[in-house]
Length: 244
Image 1 (tube, rainbow, N blue to C red):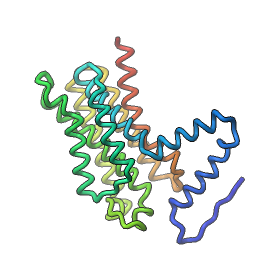
Image 2 (image 1 turned 180 degrees about the vertical axis):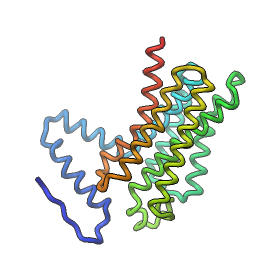
Image 3 (image 1 turned 45 degrees about the vertical axis):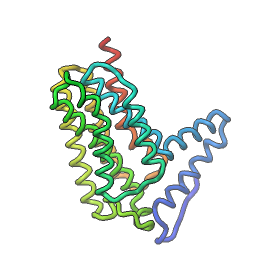
């Protein structure tokens, strides 16, 4: 067993990263395949590639639930935009973050807007689902890095408001996600859209984890917080495959 101690002024994120590196020693002592696998997963998480792929998957799943067909042009564009935004390490203020989320959402639902066969209510529900999903993941990320943001002077929402309020805001956005998923499921009249309900469900579990878990490991937390995106996408894909 290895113990890690630090002074009272040491930020929690520094301790997390040290513990993360200690945990990584077990992977580095394994075979070459395990070392390569760990390095790949760590890069995918640290570069926000898992996050960007998850958002692109949600866009593809929502579109497939409405139109019945999987399209990859807009998901690829969505992935590129989200990945470049997060990989560059942009830490904006809440107003600009909301602007970016709104812009990405409009781009993501553009195929539904121009499709005359799609009801406007379905497009609006898909827009709320995608926007709230991106916003929740952003709030989780900012909560995880709140101490580092305070030191760096980044004015993210968790820095500006207290911890209890940000949890209430996150919970409220999860409710919006659930309402959008239920609305989309009801309007689509297809079992495929039911898979989108996994997004708010797993997000609620992540919020409980974030509230009760005192010490977060950076890599593990990043993978866990990306789970709602992948759960929704894979659920829709699985239901679609089973119904064919």
